[in-house]
Image (cartoon, rainbow, N blue to C red; front, side, top):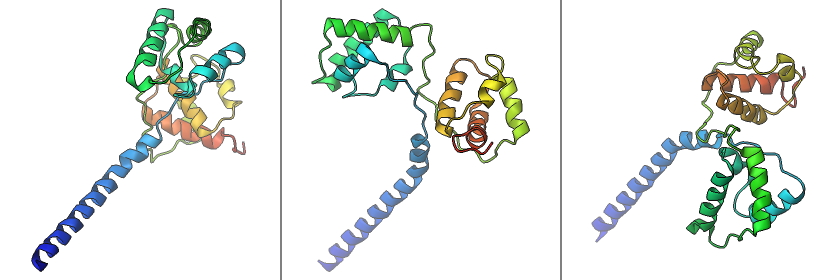
Length: 198
C-alpha cells in the first residue's frame, strides 16, 4: 500500500513539473500576443452613437469595425450573420431605422475604398534601436511620399498610438518591415511621445 502511495506522489509531482514547464515555455508567446495592436476608432456622435450604444457595445468594441472595408450589402450581410450566430444569442434586434443609421455610418467610415486594419500584426521584439539619423532615414523612405515630415515631427502620441498609426500606414502601402516599424515606434515614443522632452 505504501509503495502505491509513493508512486502516485511521484506521478503527481512529475505532472506538476510538466505543467509548470509547459506554462514557462508558453509565456513568451503569451507576452507577444499581449502586444498585439488593435485599431483606434473615434467614437461617433449623435444618432449613430445612440444606435451603437443601444445595440452593439454590450458584445464588442467599435474598434472591431476597422477590420473591415465593405460596401452596404457587405455590411448588411455581416450584421445579419453576426447577429444570427449562436454566440450572439440574446443580442438586440436592430430596428430598421437603427440599422439604416448604422449602415450609413459604417459605409462612410469603413467602406470599400477604406483600408481595413490588419488582423495579424504582432509586434516583433527588438533589441537594436534607431538613432535620430536612422529614424529620419526611415521616415523619409517610408512616410514622406504621402505626407510631410513636419506633420510627424509636430505630433505627440504614446508609443501605442504611434504603433496603431504606423500599422495603418503599412497596411496602406508604406514600405517598411515589421522590425523597422517597431524600431520607429520605439524612437517616436521616446522622441515624439507624450512625455518626450524635445
